[in-house]
Length: 142
Image 1 (cartoon, one colour):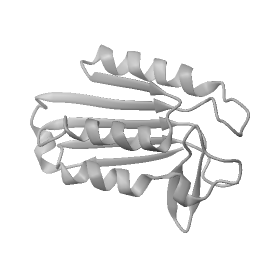
Image 2 (cartoon, rainbow, N blue to C red; image 1 turned 135 degrees about the horizontal axis):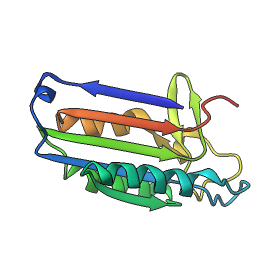
Image 3 (cartoon, rainbow, N blue to C red; image 1 turned 90 degrees about the vertical axis):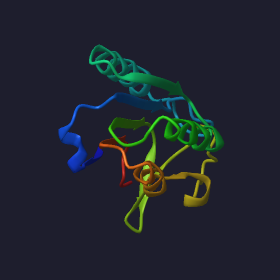
Image 4 (cartoon, rainbow, N blue to C red; image 1 turned 180 degrees about the vertical axis):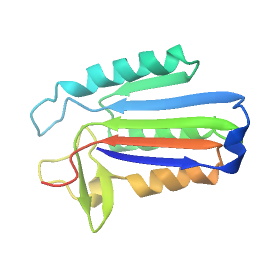
């Protein structure tokens, strides 16, 4: 599991909003189904909701769906917002970059067919939130 946490100076002030995007991919086109993602997404969603986060939970997304979900999520992020992004499913690391595997990836997927986690983080950072908490619940090495 890879966790990225960024705390800025503005975090010492209460957030006026707390948002979370949780994605769990378990039903892969060319892989065995995973049991954990739906359960883990539900569990985290319940915990975040209990501390007043606005949570969007999504399951089994394709690459365009993941990218669109992130673009929509970024619309809710700005200064003094706490943001949580969680992905649970298949993933890998290539040349030090982590990739999220979409549900419709072919059996011999490449980086071009997957979602670059560093680019997602850059999208979040551009919005300058008070806090970014990025959790990648993926296997990064074969």
